[in-house]
Length: 569
Image: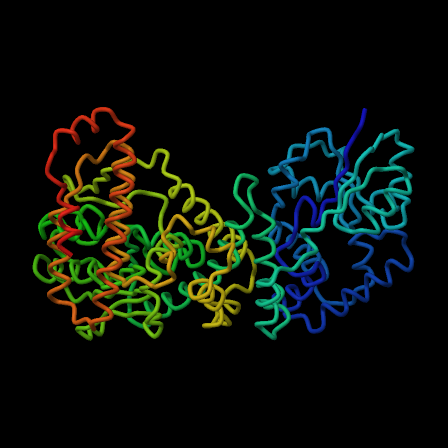
């Protein structure tokens, strides 16, 4: 029977550090053992000079340190702590397959590491220290042949041990290269921090997250999530935590939908430092009455019997602070603060009132609102937006069924969660977070300002920019997003008539209050015309495929309101 064999480390599983010997640095820093890394490497060299394939116990025989047993146990435990799956290979692993590995901890150890992820018998694990023979010399393959194991295929990440030596034994060997590659982002973060341990943990976390990609998610979307968006989220988490600690905040409320990713990330990084609530709230929900909003806040534990319960900070991405202002209004008019405070933390927010409790982290970058749709797509939750509140509960008008954007955001959230769970699995997380600074924003801000061709294609459904490369105004972006959503509802048969009168009123309102230059006004009109033309073309195309709608159109001799509107403009 033909059998396939797999290498264990960096083929089926990896560690969330840059290279295996960096685990010795973790021991050195965690247990305060001077020069442990150097001593541990020297001890292994001495053991290999005497034993063909030494065990970890034999290596520690040459190690002169205090509390040797405690250190030994800690090193063994690090494999589990730093373990991360390589899903593209695990998905191809069959129950009858073998594991063939060069390692100083035997089959029992590798079985305990992998038994909850891949199903295999302990007898199918072959480790060099158990056989006193290595793959790197070819001797382990020879010994397995003598056991009448008909290994026809083998895959691993070491070209000499897993490919060249396997082929000398007439085994069809494949080289797994992905774990040996360092992406541009991984190199960027490796060189960002001078401390060798922090550098290894950081670049290793990004690498492990990349290799953990589920097989049903595209590589481009996954890599964007774990290597471009994740470091930005990490920096925001650090700054949000610092802001809340300095402001005496003990309860962070993440507003839907743009607060969802931060809600997940903060819960992983700092699970016990704050109380966290994900609150379904939206631009549409702001229009609800004060009493309905108060009742909804009561239902979510924000207030109790009309009294604010904690020092609260809400988080949202942007842009005008409407949710913060509405919630603050309700709390001040309908509730008692009872000495508690209310704060707002945004990525970017217009704070025209100079409210000292309203903070915009990236307010220095005034171009961010021009990319509102794309930024919100990055941070959004895989759910519909709240329409209103009914009996103190959020109401969602439309279903997520067959909505491709829901799957898009689901995959981004999956990548963020994967990265943060890997990042959290080390003993030096607090010191590592202290080293996070504004440079962690660089990949994301570069993406926002100058996306690559691949990134533009990835976000093409989120209205990246005008075809003529002229940037629309933030207000036009908002209107266009609304129109695009209504086009979708029209096509699904769930929205029968667009309220053009309300749009016309909005146009008159903008025309009246916006202090535009002549050129700015012309651009605004140009964008509005383009939006209505897109909407008109889309709805006409749909109606042509609908007999009922066609019959209705034939009865209407006068021109539709939106045609009159275009002509009037």
